[in-house]
Length: 283
Length: 126
Image (cartoon, rainbow over all chains, first blue to last red; front, side, top):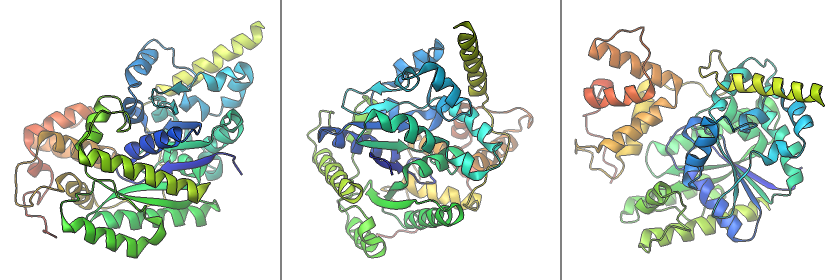
């Protein structure tokens, strides 16, 4: 049983707010004084790194071939030999401080190649447990209170590694007629993973995202989702807020971004409240 | 120790070489049965058009880009889109397109060419 609380943002669809969710929960936890590690597994998009203004620096390291070892290295079969040779430096090299409190392991283009390597691993348990082994054996000793994973918006070997490693899933979904089907499919996916592979994976939090508070439709969806998903639904929806995107473009979360718009204020409150709920569930 | 240093360098070369492999050539086990392509379109279309009146035909360029990026996260969708673009523009089918080229050519063709029924009104639930 890990000492840190772990969660992964997972939904088999891109653009739903997984990166935003992880970034903001991470900062909210750091603001509570917790030691937080964020891991970006979403491949070449590297949105989590961009959200903290780290991508251009990291990109330069990649271009200068000063990017080894990286997160994809940690999940390769050679990892234990590499870490034996490098010692503490092996993991320390991957971790970057963000200006807003959490530490971050950026995504790396090598995750694509890793996907190919994992395809060749016949044993499912071995294929999907690499990240978990890395976290259990190499990251836990560093003493983080929370480890949050940003997973790709598709079901693949990397996202399954993330789900296995975290055990707890957070999924942002939008309030729309098609979106509730996504949430249902996610629950089916998680049940299938749990039964088929005998691992403990739970949907801990469904977060209603990009909600337009000006319409009665959003209230209706909130009621409908509450009825259907009960306590899994986070108590506060995240409002549709252009400043979330503006902040990300600026390399910041809303907590740092200078905006006094009502939606920005509401979003900050919602992220904080949902973070408190998550800690209560997982703590 | 020279042997350890050499071994580390060897490991570095092996893993960096593997980092450069871009294409996934095998099949992975998925517990999720693939959706039909049009259903994926409709799901993602709904996502990017939420907030826009269903009868409006003007979708901002960034929303089309967001739509296409989401669809291209999925390998099956990406290949399907690529084939349609090549058929529509009469291009060489053996020539692979980069994701940016797919985005650019989508803007050129227009979404209706790629997504049957795109211009039909979405059911208004308000």
